[in-house]
Image 1 (tube, rainbow, N blue to C red):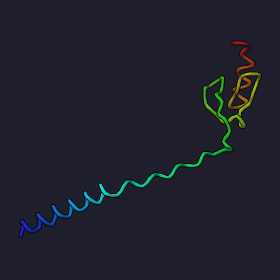
Image 2 (cartoon, helix red, strand yellow):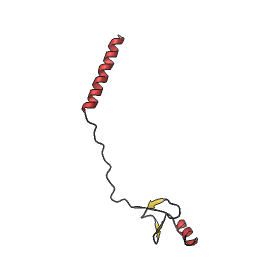
Image 3 (cartoon, rainbow, N blue to C red):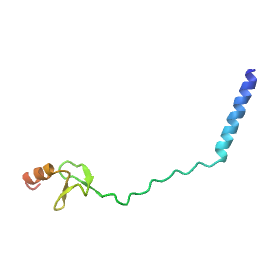
Image 4 (cartoon, rainbow, N blue to C red):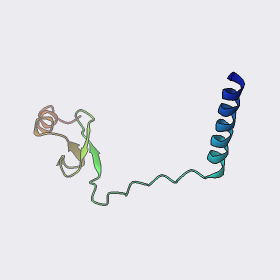
Length: 78
């Protein structure tokens, strides 16, 4: 009885491996690129990256919040 179960398991495993080798893996669907994504900029004060649409600009410098903009301008030129 044990031999019969052993051979059933061996045959089942062989058929399973053969089917896996026979069929190629399905290609993974690629995520579509979001064309409306806003470029990211880095806050000069803290280094956090925020979308450019949400960032505050002062010349060439970008800030994540009004507080960081005011902190950097009040401390003078770096």
